[in-house]
Picture 1 (cartoon, one colour):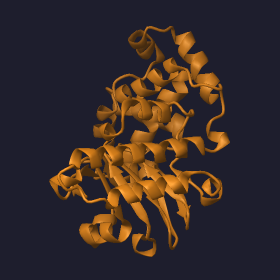
Picture 2 (cartoon, rainbow, N blue to C red):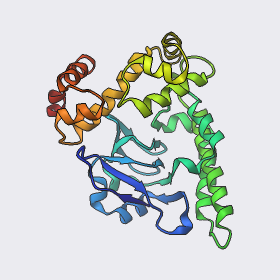
Picture 3 (tube, helix red, strand yellow):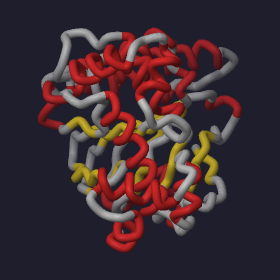
Length: 293
């Protein structure tokens, strides 16, 4: 299933994709009961940062699952998608059962991945049962689970291709069922906005100004602002700041690294500048946010 790494100074435990056998490949389909047994009780007690994607469906029970400081109450029929790089915290995993699929990003073909990424301004983490009950999502799950049960034999490559297509089908059906309020903005997501969003994820620890991204992408700051407002209602600078503050909250909440170290990791040359920046956007100082957590 996975391999748990040692916590860095931020104490967010890295979890790597580590198939149990070579036959599993880059996509593993398993139920939560099997995941619990393999991981052991301690595996699910502390915050994790996955280097792979995890999709799960709750068939029985209820639990609260937290993804980047948002708590989701999960019940039967709900689907959760935790994406690589997000920080998540299991609730009472013993209280729920259902299927899950773990997959590395490169396991999904580029076209499908791009279509899902550009299907809306923001991809949700949870699809409530009421939203997807009249969609083909259930059929997509059934196809994926059937592919996961197929024996590999001497045709592992064909089985892996079937699993990849089935996982892609599930992702695209979820994208089609995406809540309307998550897709507010232009009818089609502009590719330059997607590039900007991706660059923020890559560079937020170095670049805090819109001009850096404009130079990198070959657009003017005015154009990036126009695209950001058209797709999200927020300015380009606000999107950059939101990403920096999210990472700061992760590091403050889930670890004991000094504020000065966190400031340096996020590209600030002076801890006092970081503290002022964080307070202006989060409403509290870094120390107060940590104590409140």
